[in-house]
Length: 286
Image (tube, rainbow, N blue to C red; front, side, top):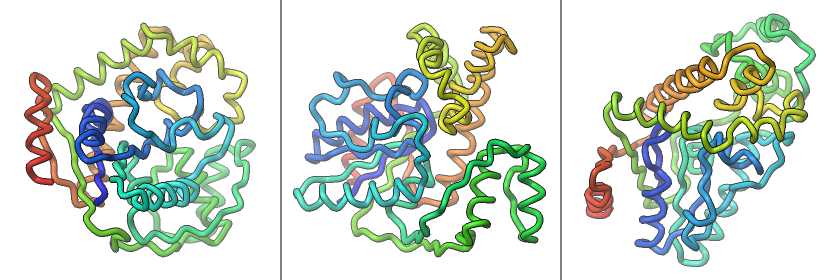
């Protein structure tokens, strides 16, 4: 059996994963694309050592912020760990909000290794012009530099049409989605951002500011790119907080879209007044 705990940012996935790991003799595998980086703790709301409660956790803090870690890399790492956990007769519990990581790990996605290039010297318009030369139909967001670079890399490496299917590679996979109403979720997101600032997010970013130009994680990660603009003096602290809150809310919307369209999720309403009710409902179905 494999359990997958997913949902939008800030919904309560970490707490659920610990409870399920205790109940089913599980080991937790990270599926958050930012939590693989060492030192990016506050801005990613990474689980603490105390919160782990002696449960084995995998694929946290495995890369430096300047490393280029891709979904191709994650697929190899995650499958390797899943198989090791299963061989120990334990339950892999994949936890996170990066939908593509989850699908790549569990489904028949064939990613060819890519020779990644540095496109930092190109403007976004120059990247778009290079993509257009391939004359492909695409719905990629032309304002999203990270996705444009990824698409151009695939095109230049001839991996754009890598084999992808909806065939699960493992038996007995349960996709558990935590959700709540929009107002509650947005309030939780807004509060978390304020808590991040109070807990030292600005100092965390300052520590890595010299790595910013060479780190896609810092350039694209919500909470990091905005604080860099604040440290540069381009926006005020208040504007920075509001921007992180807004971008986090938008990200939550995109997460819902991916999960609902790409994965067979069974959703459970998160009872924040008595989380045990949510846990019991999930365990009953499992």
